[in-house]
Image 1 (cartoon, rainbow, N blue to C red):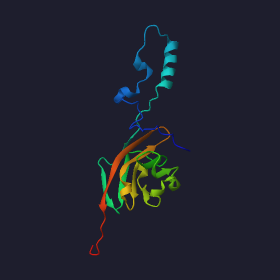
Image 2 (image 1 turned 180 degrees about the horizontal axis):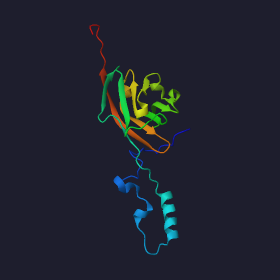
Image 3 (image 1 turned 90 degrees about the vertical axis):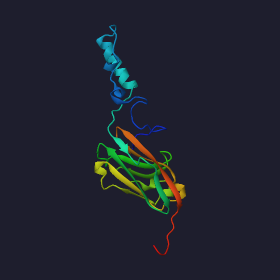
Image 4 (image 1 turned 30 degrees about the vertical axis):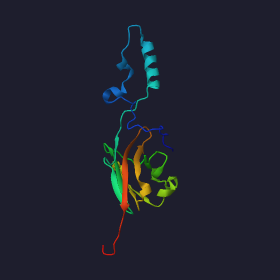
Length: 182
């Protein structure tokens, strides 16, 4: 089963843009009516509004690094993301991407890693730790960081009815120097 196609720019929530709090998911009864509306037309209005104003109640938030992650060239780096409130993510798609959604760093879908979907630059360099996926916690290790790895990363969780992402920056500097004395 494939996951829903994301929009060109992923929202941080599935609510209509600009709406927050309880007012974000109003039903037709919240819009009021005039005395000219009959019971039939109120039902029709409710049906129409339900179809033209899609609204998905927030199910969980994706929490990722809140500050830029820093690494030296040659080091391994770990990105951790989790769902709040705690939610089983075993049946979800979990995607780590760089710069844009289609640039796949690592993807977990249908209960397993989908390494064939990774960008070539990341093949053999990532490992998704799923020990706590039933609690909504995952960590991605990126091995042997290069200067080309610097950029904006995201982790995206998608269930059958809801999706959300968290984004952060990876800053890469210098060269890892290994001396014979260490």
